[in-house]
Image (cartoon, rainbow, N blue to C red; front, side, top):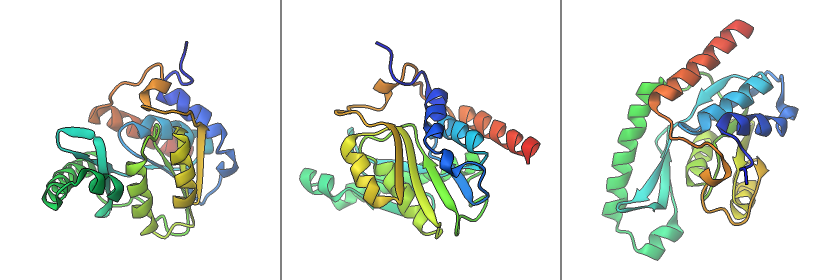
Length: 220
């Protein structure tokens, strides 16, 4: 049985169809969560004829058990903690701080590599569509939304090809709008809904962003 999405580009094309109300508007920006969200967001941005930027977010995984997300950090010095997980597993504050420091270090490295250390454009008063390749717990996206609120956008739209039902419901309260192609129940992993779901490298992200910049320069 084939998965609903051939790959991330295909998922982005299907997702873009659900966002056509934002097409060809001069107040819309598309933000990708790297790495996996970049090819999805590229398709969305091209379809909507909107500018594409990236927004770096890192999950805070419990050492030795990274599947347990304690929270996430995002560009702008934002940290979101999952208090339910922290309290249930009795995670010491020292562990949280050590993981936070490590992930902020990697976040800053990626900002330098991707050239995303500062906002390319102001998001104040704009509609920001923030895209990833899917959400399970949504901790990374929650950190991104919290960080983006600091930029005073007019509207934050979370857009993903696939997300869990309960996560979709939670983000209907966190964001101004959430859009998804499918909301399967249960959802054990995002990758199971793709035929092809490879890990992306920094070089892959560079290539995709270069393509986006070239497309913008030739159509702008």
